Length: 256
Image (cartoon, rainbow, N blue to C red; front, top):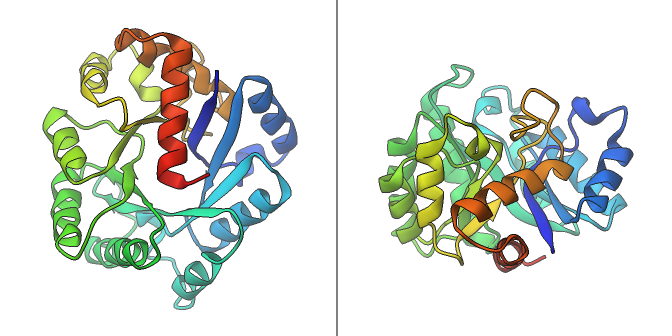
């Protein structure tokens, strides 16, 4: 069995008192690689430092849409500079969010476009956050693909079958987090059954949204197994086989 957590926020304050223990527990639970994802310039620096300190951690650098409004003028240049750091394997997280009103939508669109262009220029895959904004995200992804091929992942996917199908057609991977295990998420599990074996990924998005039966707790990479078990059962796949194929997909996309 091999597990890779393709999205975690290990730099955040929720892990400040026991970060080393959380990493050790993940390794003990079979999670061999954790992708620590930045949400701003300071956060992106922090995840690159974490990756430098721990062989099991890699990093992604970017400015999450809800934090674009507070980004300083020089923060985008800082993101670009961090790409050259060892073990930076992705751009993001980026995307669009209409649920929260923290950043005016045109500013979100500007930064999403910057991330997509940076991905295409560097060859690093991008990580997409979308909340109540799938139509807008797809429109920008279609426009980006006219410039060239796309490499990326729809992180913590909660969309419907049509959205998933178009994302796949655009060449993207689909990643599922703890929400797919919730009792109310039967429709999402049905979507997960349709994702091709070579395009499905798993993540925790920790510290958020711990999977069943740990819902309500602080999420952490060690809990990835619960999401993997749920999806393996839904897809009628042997657990070890499912873990290995999702890890192979992660290695292919992020080139770990």
